[in-house]
Image (tube, rainbow, N blue to C red; front, side, top):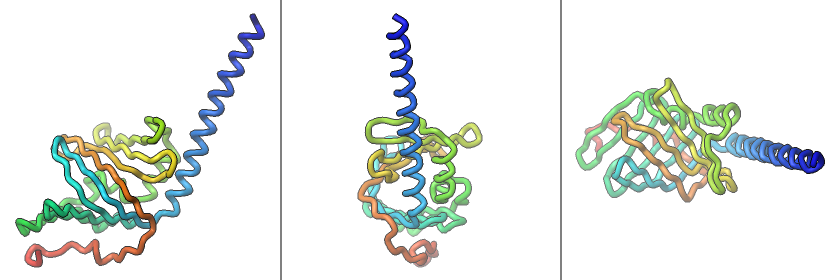
Length: 191
């Protein structure tokens, strides 16, 4: 009886050791991959409440992003200091401080690397590894990585109007050439 008990403990120990080793190995690989990324281009599906929108984005670290929503004739741009929503159909630009948005965290590669280094994943399934950041006991940001390719595949957060925002990424291209000029915010009269 004692040998069976010892064998069971040994099996449990090796199982837990393997899980921890596998997680640490994933974390190290993810950090090494993310360190090499300077730019991203991807297609996306964004869901806010029941509303679904499609488009494509460029991200250039740190703090630069431009997304186009062709059907809505809308763009968003983060230029390092400001976040703007451009509605070309109405020739309007809405300005927000980038620091007050979840994008401020996402567009700084060092923030993502620190999250991966210093936190355990909040959820792991067969394909996706999720990290969760809670700021000021209210802002929740979840970032999703593909378990096999190690690519970022999306994020989820809550917007200023308490709507859940889901941003799913596909067709990712890494380290393509992106000129800083595309992150320039136009003037309303030039729309």
